[in-house]
Length: 133
Image (cartoon, rainbow, N blue to C red):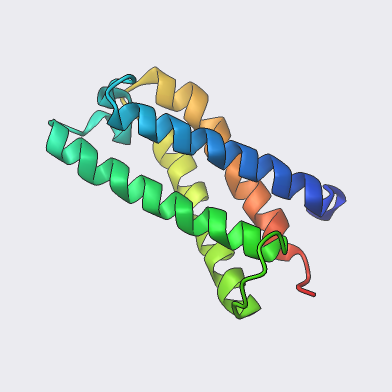
């Protein structure tokens, strides 16, 4: 059933979603969006926020790169098995994050980010299942 979603549509949707996530994290780092609504409300100060948000951006760069490689959008010569492992790791990360968001202190995280992380897990799985060429 998951493979009924066209591969290119899954790629485009997830890349768009991740681009939005990048913007969101940069807005948090610029303090335009309060950091109290991310990381389950556990960030206590600016230093923690910059550390946690930097990790988020780095993680998203890794996923974004893996998707670009898997979709053959960038011509980097990376072993397809490494890309597969990265994508499956992100399926697990997004699935666990979905569960975590259900128990977040902030309703915003529960109601907005739970569906987004679930969709991200689903799309990562769809992309990971595509046979490499």
